[in-house]
Image (cartoon, rainbow, N blue to C red):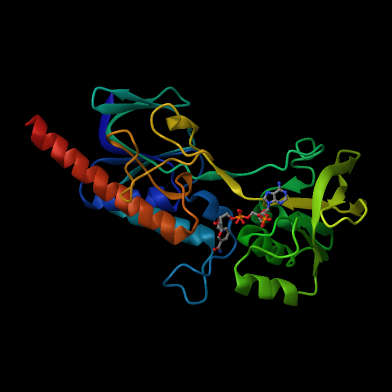
Length: 313
Ligand code: NAP
């Protein structure tokens, strides 16, 4: 079986930064990623709060730069195969992917990130890919001059609503309260945009479809107003994310919401297992915090491997 120093599971900003730090320290480093490296930022149109880019930068471009930097220092990438299990073997970990390939790693950094939450309403699953989407960057262009809605009131919902105004004739933002959670400067742009119409204090109770595609949503009011039907061509759901922590659920401690519990250096409750980025708890879910977590986790994993090597002799 192939043996490496550090296996990094997940190739978003946390995993890519961990790979850069580990590879620069001359540790044999492998990044295992289900899709193209980059994680959620690959489908983020524009990132304007990552330092060093005064005008902002596309999410895909940051991801490409991060990957190139890690590769430049010798990190290896195994992409398009999902990790199926992480099993302790003595002091090491056996990491197995969906192709049945295994790697033995002295330390593992889990950087699997988070996935978008579902609304869990009738019609949502049935019309996914037929008007229901979780990715404005991927699907926005399909809705030129159409009417779409974004569900949610956080940074993701409002930023993606603004992005969708490049294509759609009208973009409703449907939010369950009467105030947005999104960062103030994004809110300001939203309120100034003529194409965006706010639907305050409304929740989607059903996605309506005809002939295999979305035709609208049923909305219930949280402020006592009557139920209504809103005709739509597309729905983009951004109601938060949940951690992808199932791989280590039996190995280390998770919090009540399923986030991996780590100390300030990224160590989980299991020796040699580290975690960083959106799979760990923390209010600030940003490229920069994920990158910082990846750097700390790599630094600690390297120290752990060095100490282990010294004590083994
Ligand atoms: P979020 O900040 O958790 O916001 C989720 C939104 O969805 C909230 O407005 C919430 O309403 C609403 N919501 C939750 N469950 C709902 C349900 N069942 N039905 C209807 N509405 C529901 O999630 P996010 O916007 O995906 O962002 C995730 C993290 O990534 C955040 O930390 C965010 O700051 C970060 N992020 C940052 C940027 C950026 O900095 N440029 C961009 C994207 C994301 P309430 O407000 O009532 O709770």
